[in-house]
Length: 226
Figure 1 (cartoon, helix red, strand yellow):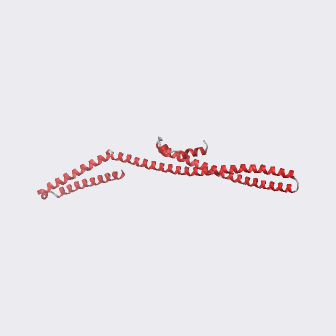
Figure 2 (cartoon, rainbow, N blue to C red):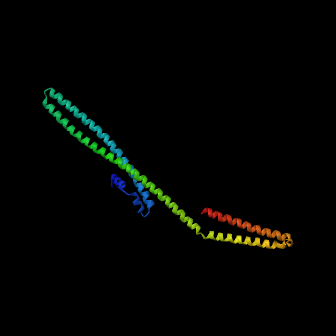
Figure 3 (cartoon, rainbow, N blue to C red):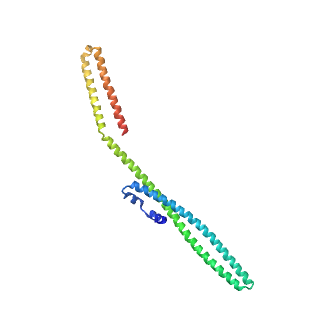
């Protein structure tokens, strides 16, 4: 398929519909963007060559027109000198150049019309390219968002967190029991407790508090990672 046929196909295509119906929309958007970028380069390269050809044709037309004027002057000169035969031959040569010039002008007109259409199509292709890029960006954002939701659900259903929270609750219950035991023990028995026993109880409470603090840090880190 020629590049201008591809250009027309792309300009007339419903990009959103093509992308949404694809099995892998993000891949389809990426391929379409690559196709459009390649087509843009090819069309612009072809347009540069066409413009160069047009300039050559313009110069040829100028030479044909100048040649026609020259043969016209020669015909007048020959007729003034009584050489009607030469004047007629000069007019025939002038007519040939005029016909060639007319063909060149028609070709120039066709080239100009083609360039004008290509310019419009290039503008539409550029707009389609921007549309495809915006669609691809939207798809990427949606995919990242969906992946984050999946990761979050996996984290929330991780049994390790449930286990850690259970241990946290157990420690809190142990602390409450120790505190209650200490309070009940202190009711009338504080005076009878030895110094060593008081230090032992203090160390036990400190150990539980330390373990609780470490567990809180673990739960906090996992929660932040989610």
